[in-house]
View (cartoon, rainbow, N blue to C red):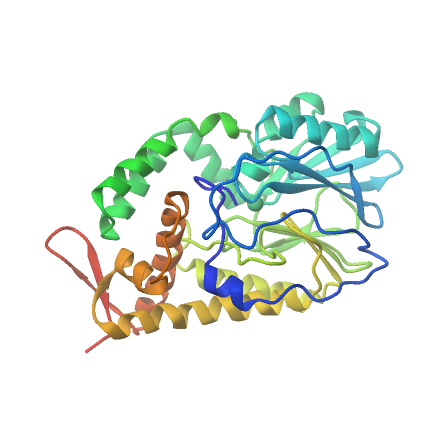
Length: 375
Ligand SMILES: [Zn+2]
């Protein structure tokens, strides 16, 4: 997560999803870390928590939880033992001092320090996952591996710092969002750099799946949707899946229009089908408690149901993306930080409907694009 503020999924899909079913207790015996149902409904939180200690999440896999300065309150990194004294770090945390202290304490507790960390794999480019990568690189000069599309997106953003703000502002205008929202979004973009200093990936994971270089027994799987280059990690021997934000236990990962992929919703559905085909036993996500494999199907069904829910919003006549958001959540005041996420996700579903011939797009005189069911 972590575009703008914590980037999370759509509320109704969340509320439909029950608590995660029990997972294999031999692999996951812990109490879940604190997690919010959805940041779309809950005010941003600045609560900090004490370091939780590294937690054994699966054989040779430890979970290190670090705090976030916004909801959800924390994010998980994983430390994976590859050989006796060789470790792979998966993600890290956001670029704050408190998060660094928590990550470092966990690495010291599990691996005895940074010396053994020989690979840093980042599931996706959001700042709560990549924000400590540059600092980790200084502590342990290990190669950084990432999905190619996310690595390229990060490099582009670092080279063109104003580009994302301009893209978002244009997206909001085309979505028919109010002017004050456009200005607020432009204001929040600047200053976020410090929470995720750029890092250059050494290993670009390109394609649909493959062996993780330098991590015998681990496969990477392209799981786009939440970001275009998101990857998950699968250990075939015992079915452990480290899923980043592709699979989360109690909320639906935000999907959103972007400039790299035409159909993020379709990408996500296909990614979850790939994960289902692997038949994992235990799913370790970037936030929240471990989940069982049924969660993958629940999220796939929720994504497809969301497209239908967005389509239903067009029954009342033509609407801009922003108007569809308001129809979709009629009695809710979305927090400012989540409006952008709601627009990007709703737009992704609208584009999907349009590509399938189930909606048509018309410009309106004020520059917004209006979606309607075909006549
Ligand atoms: Zn996240």
